[in-house]
Length: 167
Ligand SMILES: [Zn+2]
Image 1 (cartoon, rainbow, N blue to C red):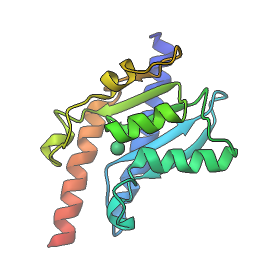
Image 2: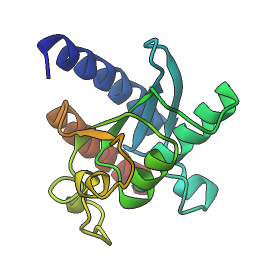
Image 3: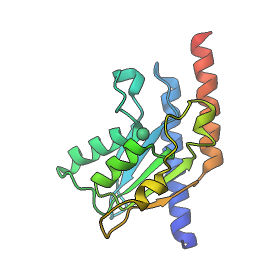
Image 4: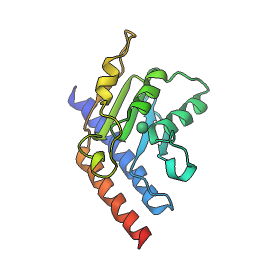
């Protein structure tokens, strides 16, 4: 990956972390956020995880962002788009990204080492593993651990916000 592309991914991830951190000021704090950029580099969707808020286990940040993006462009295919997530997509979100034909998935914190500290992970299938099982020629590229430390920090801030809500 070239330095220019790496810098672009870092910049978009930092923007996403900043956006996601605003959820900590809401009644439903969540450190899981996702954003989607089209091939022109335009931000077309941004969303938090709303599982608790909506009482719906499918409302992960990535799925919410994909739903917003397809609605916005009026097409179920997000070919040419890049999805960013503060955390490694779970198998549901990774599969949804594949169904949506997203080209690139970039994430910050890892599921196994980072998210698992706060939420016991029910599966041990990595996003990369899932992408590697794709049967179509055009594979979704998974780029791990971009701004991982900042994403880990977001988890810590979330924990503090939750503790404050309970106090
Ligand atoms: Zn997910």
